[in-house]
Length: 54
Image (cartoon, rainbow, N blue to C red; front, side, top):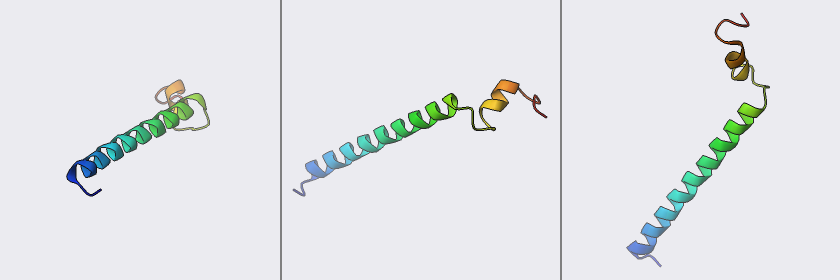
């Protein structure tokens, strides 16, 4: 069980799993922030432009 090959495979699979998990989280967060205009710092600044609301 504790051979270097299996440990290396474990690290590789763990790294790939963590990378995919982070990618999915980033995609979900970006989709939610772009679709919903509830955040005043993100979409309103982009829509109004610089100095639009002030």
